[in-house]
Length: 233
Image 1 (cartoon, rainbow, N blue to C red):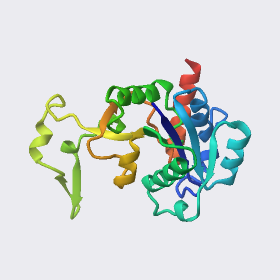
Image 2 (image 1 turned 135 degrees about the vertical axis):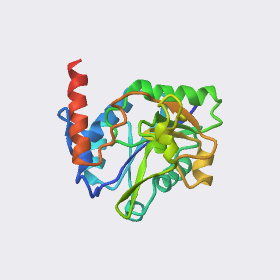
Image 3 (image 1 turned 180 degrees about the vertical axis):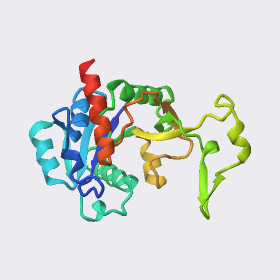
Image 4 (image 1 turned 45 degrees about the vertical axis):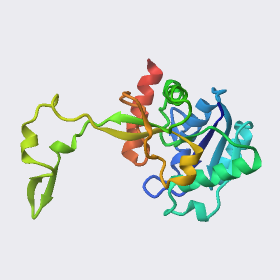
């Protein structure tokens, strides 16, 4: 089984500037993901796709076994979707090095991701004979059946008013993408314009802290609080 890991780290965040270099437990946010990947032998290679020259230098200096891949200005635009970057990186890798069975996509803005979560996704991929993409998901806490919309300064149910009388045990279980891992088939990346291909298999993560995605100051504060508690324990 050959799995290529791709870390996507674009420079130019609007809401939280320079976020990959902000500190979490005295370590750069991006280093939490890169240090975690150093512990794995499952991956054929680890590619760091970025337009950030500082991340390129960091990868060369501290993570010499990883492949830093400079992202073009075109692929660094705000309008570019993650699947477009992954497709470009995979085509480059296949042409230069060779084919793989799966592509594991990592977003470094989720620095509290654990080794067990990565292993769980890989195990699900193995159990399905590497024939289906695997996406990490979490049970949704805020159920859409209990959500509201406001129109003309009036509260109205998003779906049906009858839903508000439902017990929590009776509503349908719904899940959301948590961003902790996308283990995608190469053919899906090449043929579908998404990181969540059709007929993907879920890998359910029920951790209360791993899926903190650092995109705002509030996210960073929350991650720092959890990180301190985890370090203490």
